[in-house]
Length: 200
Figure 1 (cartoon, rainbow, N blue to C red):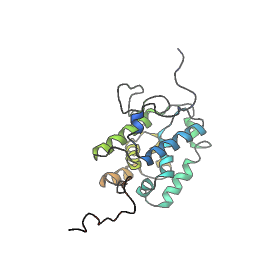
Figure 2: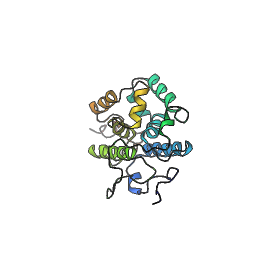
Figure 3: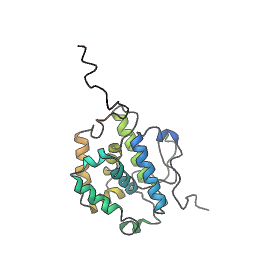
Figure 4: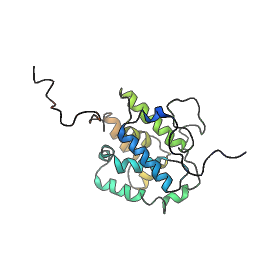
């Protein structure tokens, strides 16, 4: 029986409703992870691709880490994927056991080929976390929380190798569930914050 798994990553999730539940910033992160996977010749977007793109593009995610030096150290490690640590992952599928390898019937899932099972589970968890706050769209910190909550995913492996403790990061986010959510992506940055109360 011929495998249905393509040699390269798919252009992206086939479920439009999944993309519609991502903030503009997180959609940009996903697009960056997809480009990186294709450029590196990887079959699937995995959690390390997502972590790399988060750190590169989302300042709220970078703010969760100890300091700028830790972020620089992580990025310096992540860029070595194609010539260093990532060589062990070539030709393999990331599956931390977070979800079954084959899923069906989940309307919010990005389960199709092109995503590792662990990355798919992280995207679902990010959307669920945002929903728990009553937000219609997931943010970058929602995805970061989902990544560090899976101790067996590649993103956590990378964090550990670069000297970052995933559990410390997760506790930091959980202690303040609104970490990274203070800025309203739809708000007018020039609006008067006292406009609604000035008439009182």
